[in-house]
Amino acid sequence: MKKSSTFIIYFLFILLFLSSTVSGSFGASEQFKGKIFNPGNLKPIATKTHLKKGMKAPDFTLPSLSGEKISLKQFRGKKNVVISFVPAAWTPVCSDQWPGYNIAKSLFEKNNAILLGITVDNIPTLYAWTKEMGELWFPVLSDFYPHGAVSKKYGILRPDGVSERALFVIDKKGIIRYIDVHDINSRPNLEMLIKELEKL
Image (tube, rainbow, N blue to C red; front, side, top):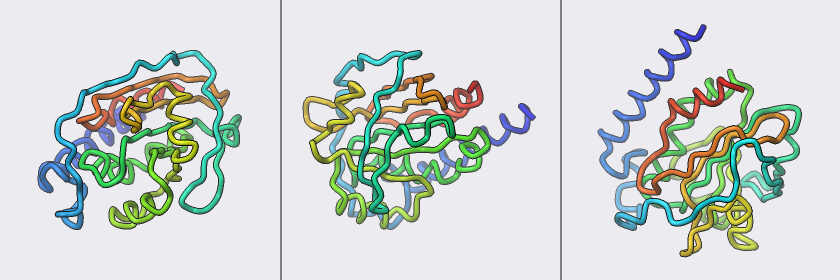
């Protein structure tokens, strides 16, 4: 079972790599050409989270694109949770990262995990952006008002008002099991994320 899981992860990693190489630096797909704002090379990490593995994850409730309010606590005892914070809509790496998780949906399901995508953008911006990138299987949440409140709770709100590019893996008991506050200029490693989910 482990062998086939490892093969799938490597296969998906190759697919993701090829998709970003073929489409260039704005990799998600051709339809983004001319619509993406390139912020240039940013300071890789601008904050230091106070959260650590083994700590209880701060709860939150945020509006989602579906119109439903989603809370972290609603998954307690039911599902492992991966929170993917990305800095901003309509930017290159973010427009690659989230569509990439569509390819890996079965690996999240296999590990009884839900993915929550969070940005500090407002709902109309997120609606237009996600429509352009195609349907995402996971809830997309807006941390717009109070601005960046959840990002701040997680210790990853940068001084310029966007969040770090960060992943938090939270188990069914609400305990943080993995943190990756990543270089904002690059996409987090999917293989590493799935390996951490498999430990739960």
